[in-house]
Every structure is written in C-alpha cells, then in structure tokens.
Amino acid sequence: MATSNSISTRFLVISDTHGNTNIQLPSIAVDVVIHCGDLTEHSKLCEFKSTVDLLRKIKAPLKIVIAGNHDFSLDLPMFKKKIADVRPPLEDDLVKREYGDAGEVKRLLQSENAKSAGIVYLEEGTHTFTLANGARLKVYASPYTPSKADWGFEYDPQQEEHNWSIDNDTDIVITHGPPKGVLDYTNSKRAGSPGLFAAVARARPRMHCFGHIHEAWGAKQVVWREEISEMSSHFTDIDNDASTSYDSLAAIHPRKFDGPDEEVNKVKILRQLREQRYCLAGRMAESGQTLFVNAAMEGEEERVPWVVEIALPKADS
Image (tube, rainbow, N blue to C red; front, top):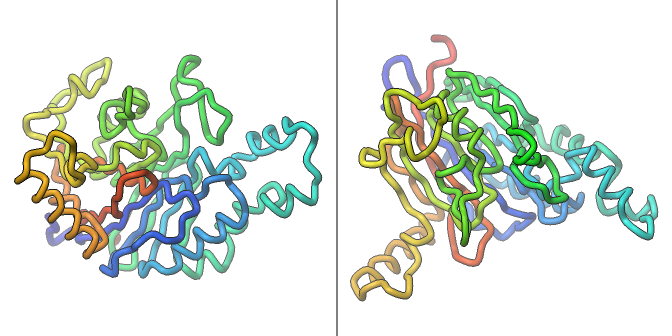
C-alpha cells in the first residue's frame, strides 16, 4: 500500500515473446514495462527489430529488457562458438545478414531509436532508476538459466551454482529463468534454480518476475517464514498456508476432470482476460512478502500479460 513516502507504480510484465508481434497488449497505462527475455526464437536480427517495434507500441516511459537463452547473439562467446561450430562453415555475408556483426544486436537495443521509445537493455547486475512518476526503482537483472544445452547465457548446474548477487534493498528481481519451487514446473519436473531461490529468499524483493518455463505461467504472492534456513528451499522457507496463488494456466483453461460449474467459470474468466488483455496480480506486495510472476507468453494455451502495482519509495526520500 502506498504511503506518504512511497508512490504506487504500475508494471506490465511479459516474457518469452519469441519474436511474435501479434500479442494482444492492454491499453491500460503503466509506468514500467518489463520483458524477461527470449525476445526472439532464433536470435536473428530481424526478430530483435520486430521486438523493438512491439515494445514501441506500448505506452510507458520505461521499458526494461533482458536477454534469454534464445537470444544467444547477445552472448558473444556463445554466438561466436555456435557460428564456428557450423559445418560446412557459414559465409560471412550470410551471418551478417541474418544475425548482424558481433555486438550489433546490443547496439540495436541501445540505439537512439530504442532509447526514444524508453527501451533500456540490462545486462546482469544491479541497476537503479528514477522513474517518471517520481519513484526510485532498484532492480537486479540476470539472463542466466541452468542448462547444459547449446544456447545463450547458460551455466552447468552440476558444475557449480551461478552467483546471484542480489542486494537486500532490491525492489524487483528480473531473471529469465525461475527459482526452484515457484512457478517452475514443466510437464515432468521442477526446472528452476535452487541458488536463485536462496538468493531471492534472503533478499525478499517486492517482486521477482521471469519466464522461460512456458507451462508455468502464473503468479504467486509468497509469505516468507521469519527465518530462512541454511539450506534454503521452497519446502522450508515459504509459509504456504499464508501465501496466495493467483491465476495459472490450470485456473483459466478447462481441464478434463472439471465439473460443469467449474468449466463455465473458467470460460468466463478467460473471456474477461481476453477483453481486458491483461491479468492483475492481486494486491501489492507487503513487508515480508514477494510476488512471483511467470510471464511467459509462448505456449499452446492462451495467456495474457501481467499487470502489477507496487509501492516504491520516492526518489527524493
């Protein structure tokens, strides 16, 4: 809840658009847009340009963007490796036409054209903003996900955990992948990072938003236990009885074993979401709570962007 020393700030959160420009965006005014990565499907230059055009259409003073594993041309060591590993070798002109020169995509996202639209591309680390509404926003951003595949911004979780350096006064954590145990369930297993969960549990930001796991679209308001365990885990550190789950794919799409009333209710919910073109993630996070948002737009089942309101400190306080 906003106070005399804070400002209510509205966020639009999306992720995993994968170059799709046909997303139905809401007309509601927001202060900040957050894109949690996978701007593209194949990391091609034309896809990045299409995503910039998509973001330009959204009316917001600030549009924060991070990379995802599909955006491998932003991960220069991986980009160079993937090009070098192709057999027979690719012609330089073809690489330049499809992907641009090394560093060209980053220059595109940091160009005057992008800046004029309010787009700010963040690399891993802590960043602070003074917003147009007078609020101060501190975010931690990271594109890294645990995997041994051949994509961008990945680390091998069997070798060592990634270093998630999240300050305790961070307002929002923006990562491409989820923490282990929260909105990270695939069709067969949990795919989030345990180290990321532990770092977020210690820092307790107002919101942690991400994507990557398309099947786990949804939002959950987590109430933390007073003390975080030494071996931090979603089993031990979340007060699940006091926490609140908002919409998920299972909550808005009819399922095989739904009763008639439940199916009718889900049809009404989905119709409403289509009309307003966003899903509201409940109340603003209070002290000792974190709102987790999986905003993945890609997937077989229909979903919409998330809108979240958070009380941020005034920039001059």
